[in-house]
Each structure stands twice: as structure tokens, then as C-alpha cells.
Amino acid sequence: MSANGVLVAHGDRPREGGPDRKQVEVAVGVLLRADGAFLLTSRPRGKVYEGYWEFPGGKVEAGETVEAALRRELIEEIGVTIGAVHPWRVEVVDYPHALVRLNFCKVHEWSGELHMHEGQAFSWEQLPVRVQPVLPGTVPVLAWFAQERGFEGATHAGE
Ligand SMILES: Nc1nc2c([nH]c(=O)n2[C@H]2C[C@H](O)[C@@H](COP(=O)(O)OP(=O)(O)OP(=O)(O)O)O2)c(=O)[nH]1
Image (cartoon, rainbow, N blue to C red; front, top):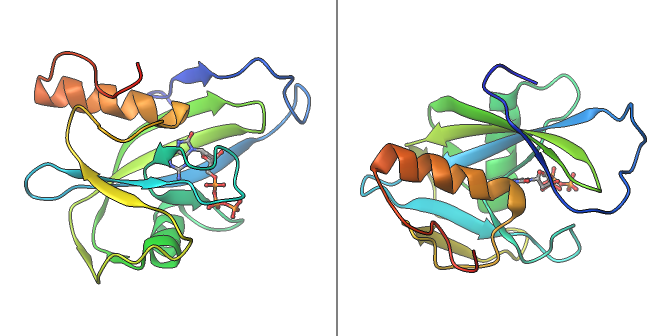
């Protein structure tokens, strides 16, 4: 785990892959508009946690950097070409289906229109987030925003 990583365990099902299971690297994009709104997308049908809201992104492939993976995933999933990628925070989440290492990156510039290529829904959100349910591994990001923005109270519905 990185120095700024936190470990969040979620769910009480037995873990897949035994005690030596590998961390799956995930590149996650926090797209920010000038007014501070951030983009959330819903997980497509057929994926674990289908319908849960998250930041767009996906798994880093072998030999790929987090930045390259993020550029690829955002073209594939939401149809935008991103500008500078700013690594923000890292979080490790221990799900029953996988141990994931989420590399959250802020992105302020992109080109192209949003097109949800996997049938997801999208929403530009501010705190408190109105869409629900929010993916467990996404919830801490809302707390980081709250800290940055001096926001107090529940960060999302259904808490
Ligand atoms: N994209 C994204 N994934 C997240 C977030 N929070 C969180 O716990 N995750 C987890 C869910 C998944 O276990 C993993 C991402 O894997 P994924 O299945 O979406 O990745 P992928 O698009 O490459 O999927 P696949 O087609 O290879 O199955 O990270 C988040 O905010 N965004």
C-alpha cells in the first residue's frame, strides 16, 4: 500500500483468491468542472455492483501506467480525451470479489462530448451527492471533497 493509502474492508463474504491474492490496480478519473461539480457514472449491467455510482475508470492492464490506463478507459467508457492527469489519493479496498488499489486522479480538462458507451447513466454532482447507491470504494472520495471544501454534514444520501 502506498504511504497515503487507506485500507477499507467491505462485505463479509469469504475473499476470493486466498491470503496471497494480488492487488488489482485501478485508474480512476475525478473529472472536475470549473464550478466544482464532479462526474459520477453508474456501473453498467453485468458488472459487480451493477447500478452503483462511482467515478469513471477501470483496471490497469499489464505494462500500462495509471495515466495511460485512465486515458484509455475514459475514451472507451465515456468518449472523452483527457488533458493533464493529476494523481490525488490512493485507496485500497478489500472487496469479496477482489482486492483493489484505487488510484484517484483529478482531471480538469478534456475534449469531446460525453457518450456513455456501456449504457451507464451519468450525473454532474456537488456535495451532498443526490444519486444513490454510491459504491463503497467511492464514498471516501466524497469525504476528501468535504474536507477540501469545508463542507459539513452527510456527503451522500442513504448514509
Ligand atoms: N472505476 C471505478 N472503480 C471503482 C471505484 N471505486 C471502487 O471501489 N472501484 C472498484 C470496482 C471494481 O472492483 C474496480 C474497477 O474495476 P472495473 O470492473 O470497473 O474495471 P474495468 O472497467 O476494467 O472492467 P472489466 O471490463 O475489466 O471487468 O474498482 C470508482 O470510483 N471507480
